[in-house]
Length: 267
Image (tube, rainbow, N blue to C red; front, side, top):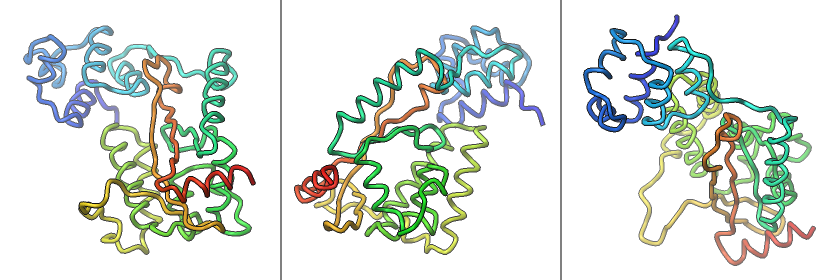
C-alpha cells in the first residue's frame, strides 16, 4: 500500500513528540497548513518538504523518501565506497581508528554492520567469539554477534545487562526512524534471538549511588576486561551513507582494563 506524504509527515511528527502547532512554530508556517498537508488537502513544494524534514531532524535517507512520497526526486546522494570523495573520507576515518589504539574502535552503519575497525578491535572480537567460530558467519553485524546464541554472549560476564542496553538502543533507532522496514526487521530478528532469555534480566535496573554506567565485561585469558562505549557521528554530513556512519570506541573502565587492552594490542 502506498503511503502518502501526509501520512509520512504525521508519522515523523508523532515520532518526534511534537504537535502540529509545535511543528508549525518550528518551521515558520501556519498550523492550518501543516494540517492540510497531513490530510492531503494541500500539496507541498519540494522546498517545503526539505524544510519540514529539517525541522523534524529527519535523516537524509528518509528525507529522500519523503520527497519521493510527494512526487519529487531525491535531493541527497548515497555514494559508494569507490567514490573518490568517499574514499578520501574513509582514509581519514581509518587513520582515526588507528590513532585510537590501544583502545578498540570501529565504524558501523545504520544497520549495525561493521564497516571498519582498528587492529585491537579485531583482536577483542576474536576473544569474544566461541572457539572455531568464524565471525563472518554473522555477516559482520554487531546485533547478531552480540545477541545470537552462538555469538559473543558466552564471553560477556554481564551479558544480560549489555544485551539489554543494545536492545534498547536498537529499539530507539526504530522508534526514531518510522517507516525504516529494514531496521524494524533487524529488531524483530534481535528479539527472536532472545526467545529463551528471561526478559526481566534484560530490564535495566535503577543505578545505585556507586554506579555511573553499565560496562561490557568481557572474559579474556588476561582477566575480566571492563569497557564502556562512546559514540560519535560525522557532523554536517550531506551524503546518506556518510550521515549513517557511527564511530564507536571501547574505553577501559578501570586501570586493570587499561593494562589488559595494552597487552592485547601488543600481542
